[in-house]
Amino acid sequence: MYLTVKDLTIYYEKYGKGKTTILILPGWGNTRETFRYIIDYFKDYYTIYIIDYPGLGKSPIPTNTLNIYNYAELIYEFTKIKNITNPIIIAHSFGGRIISTISSIYNYKINKLILIDVAGIKPKKTLKKYIKEKQYKIKKKLIKLLPKRKQEIYKQKLFQKYASSDYYLLPPAMRETFKNIINEDLTNHFKAIKTETLIIWGENDQDTPLKDGIKINKLIKESALITLKNATHYSYLQYPILVNKIIYEFIKKDQ
Image (cartoon, rainbow, N blue to C red; front, side, top):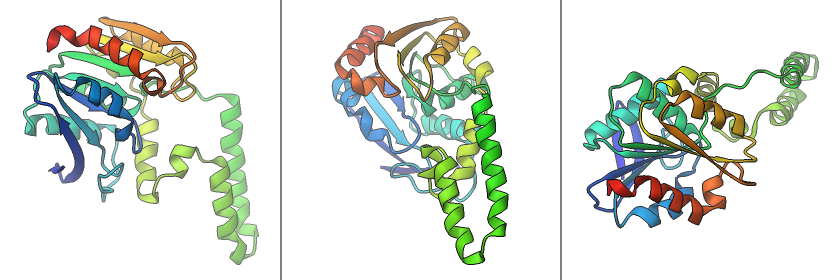
């Protein structure tokens, strides 16, 4: 189903008819489909909403560049339009950026919060990353010394080599939005979360390392951290049965 919110059109799906609502905020990219195990497990007991963000999945690319505050406002307005009150929220990766921002800015009551390998803690720039950025900037300037017919080819090869996979695979219209999002440190937003929170993290997550989960656990007073052995950034896909049971134990009183 499609809905226009604040001049942005988004695609969303709804399942179940339970009295308590679960709102799933997936990660960056077309990751809505990765939540089938969770949806199928809970849809007979809860009402479930899941969203494709603007420019991702089935939602059209926005005409303007966005930032994390635009996404947070969008989701907040979506809950008002759909009359979603006091929901249980399950957030993965980028979804953690959104819900931490909503918690910090809006007076929105959340029943319980489940954070799975979420993003939002900005990493310190390492020497390796600093050198890589310098190399890219220097080589990009040297392109002008090449014959014009070769400049675009070399530019694309250079971009492919140095850009992250998430950034490279995005349509050009979404790249500035991506940079706006990853450059925002949301540490203080996580600190503002007052909801009872369950944090699930993959021990070997390379995208959002476990140290981020430990830090978020310390920032949110009413939180508990569960680490899944040998799991990576998609821990809920690697251990679907276990993750569903963990979530069920956390929310079962709220059916």
